[in-house]
Amino acid sequence: HKGILSPLAMDAIITLTRAECQAVAIQLNRDQQQQISAIDIINSSSIFTNAIVGEEMVSAGAFVMVVHDILEDLRESADELLGQQQKTSTDDPQHQRTIFIQSISGCVQLLHQCKDLIRAVLTHPNPEPDVNNSDYTDPRPTIAEAWFFSISSLLSIDKELTNFFLIQQDATFHQLVSETIALVVQLLCLKRLPKEKISTQNGICEKHNETFQIGMSLDGPQTLAMMMFLELALGIPVVGSGGESILRRVSHEFELTLKFGFEDGERGGESSINADLLGGALISSALYRGTSGGLPPWAVEDIPGVYSAMFHGVCQQNPQSFCEILRVGSNLRLFGAVSSNKNNASASAWFGAIPAGKKLAGRYIENMSSKAKETFLTKTRDLITFTTASANMDNNSDKTNKQICNSVLCDSKNPDVWRQFKVLLKAACGGKKKSTCYNLKPQVTNWECDRI
Image 1 (cartoon, rainbow, N blue to C red):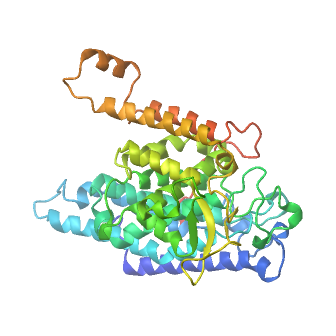
Image 2 (image 1 turned 120 degrees about the horizontal axis):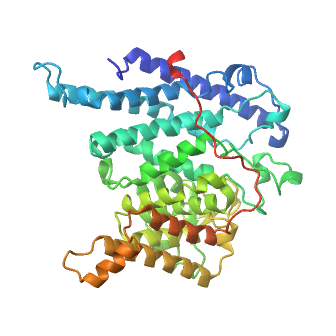
Image 3 (image 1 turned 180 degrees about the vertical axis):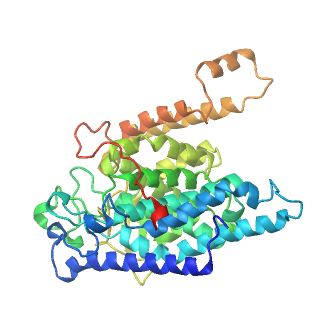
């Protein structure tokens, strides 16, 4: 049946995807094993070349993309599978629904068995090689694109066809989504902002410390897929399996290895933060960092949709919760790595390009005065609070208030509201970046999965 994976096909995709990731890891780790600086990466591979995984061939991550195509087939055939359009009177709607749910769950289990290797590869600190001087093709961007598109398809199906049934009932699905959000946080925190130094522990020569980027590039279709995923994931308004929110699960992804907090006076001490708020603050910090230069300018244009999803989804249209996440995210610092003594943290730790003691949000937010920060948060709160109150205005409200509401299009789901917020956010994060080395907005990769 279209959209149904047989056990043999599932095992094959898992085996091939894991083997591909292991080959990528070997390629990336070779330089460190030979004590070669990441800037001097040996740009050679017998597999990851233009002739094998280049733009004209089948890209790395193709088998993960097959899962995405299967999920899209499931969505297209949902009416039949769910028994909404029966071809014969003998069809059992409940049986068809069971097949549909089992098919999605099979894809969830498949992706779950590949997630750890994929995440390790995508967050590897080795830089993308100089394509002008090598035939080597970095496989990580297309693997990332395939991964984000696949998880996005799962979320879209769960939202549109089952009303978040799976995210609430399937612990594995819930874990996949939260870990992929954590992956986004890691990728953004790998990005060094202008005039920031980076860790020489990641294999970067001291002479390149001022200008060199570590990790996979975000200037490509992988970021289109990443922003689409983030908007879908943060738009989930329900509590997941086991009663845990998505935000709490995101915080759990980091709290066992890294310690975060605040300096005195920034928010009454580190003990005042809970797991849900920490998860939201980590996401907020990463988005601040992305807006400050970690993301290409064309990707920053998608920021309004992400914040709108966060407000209406995980924050459940609560202006206070939304602004508190922004506030804590602007103050969140890396204290260090968690040691065997949970009360202590190593001050020598790095989180991507961020050293212990620094704010995750980056230097623009780090250097922002308290007054400027309060102005940003106050304007945001006024914008969101006014639009929310206006959108929910009772039918008996006086005519004058209604006219004011209509004149400024004050609906919190209106894109204009979030475009106004983007203006506030970009101003807080250093304004428009006049000269960057980023490319123009790309097109998604042409996978042509029918050839596989």
